[in-house]
Image (tube, rainbow, N blue to C red; front, side):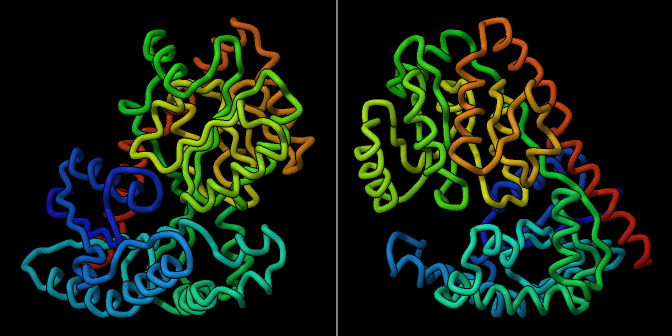
Length: 383
């Protein structure tokens, strides 16, 4: 593969979670495999004049502007960039698009908006009240019904079937390559690290500490976690993510539940590891997930997961051993959290070891090899 080059397309490519983090980890793994990798981001699409999205109506309008810009101006400039790259003598350039832009040999399906909105209920109202949803749905109809991409990568088998059902006229072949996890960065803590992390989170000795990580509280089921934990006096919950406005709503809710002393609000953080190191379980009762990276990150830290059977969870959790697959109800989540509380020291250690072993099978280098094999196939066809 020495003459193969990869161009990744995403609004942002940087460490962290989400789409930009996936592209970042793949970029590092491609480089470790000896494959030169370039990037096309919002900055390359001349979108640096657009501010970062913030809270409230202004933040939503800024996000809409960024998505529209990268989907339109970005598409035109990405096509131009690819054309230049492929004119180079002997070039074998394969492009991987992660979001927005209607260009790229490979498109990575990080989530299907229409499926996500249906899963949350009130589909029509959720779509029409948000111009970004209407724009994204129209753009993706063009993406999937046309010949924009040569292959669509889905993160789970369930997501591939959902894509085919949502877009029955899908032209490109649909394959499955799951996301990975940085098993070096995300690792079980030492006893001292764990004790320090629990103290910093404000978790008392003997309490079961459940961590929720995510920025979409409604879709990811935070209310279910808070209500379920309210009935379990030994459970403390840390909420990692959310804007100040969102966290103000959570404070009001936990005050009504009379659990203020057992709910810790971390807000947005640059690194979730300290909270995972302090956790006895991750709770993620989502209505919809394409592939939640935090599930693998928790497993890599030796933390079992209480999750609904959506996204990556059914593929990677050994129900009752490395986690619990639960109904998306308060009762379902309560049963999962109660199982966490009931673990004795031996069972907790066994669960941590099994969780870590699962994560080690999903390192980014292994995931990158599958992308590179796909890219090599596409490049060979172009010869």
